[in-house]
Length: 179
View: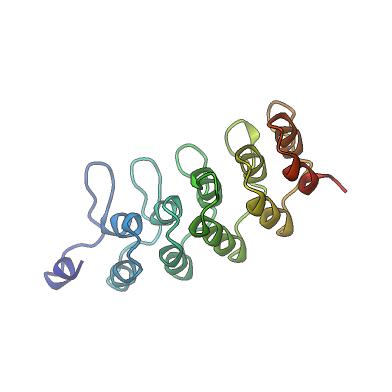
């Protein structure tokens, strides 16, 4: 990045996949490089050929600091990629089975920044549906605390509670009980 900036290269140039320097810095989790690129005029919401932004990439990999820099720099938090996934949906989908601390912290960052907790994704699923399917108890708790609607049904007519029940996720079902 220092070399790019030292020769005054166009920081918004992208390759054939649509990746630019900001996308790559976000994918690698380099918050300092992200900040330097943004300071040099990089477009915070530039998309690749899949309509993914740097925020999508940082979130995919659980890069907390990078996601925070992008959000503070005005990244559109609820922008969808070509599959209809927001950063919040990607965070939940990409979290490993144990909902690693990185992904959990990124989720909290997105929620604190006002990410839409009830946005729907493929087949009408929400982040709550995905978290229930994956057994991410802490993510379910965070989503519910931030107003996730536990009554939303996906295209199959299932709520997150129904999904938790089908997958025999007993601990999750209590969290998802509709009051």
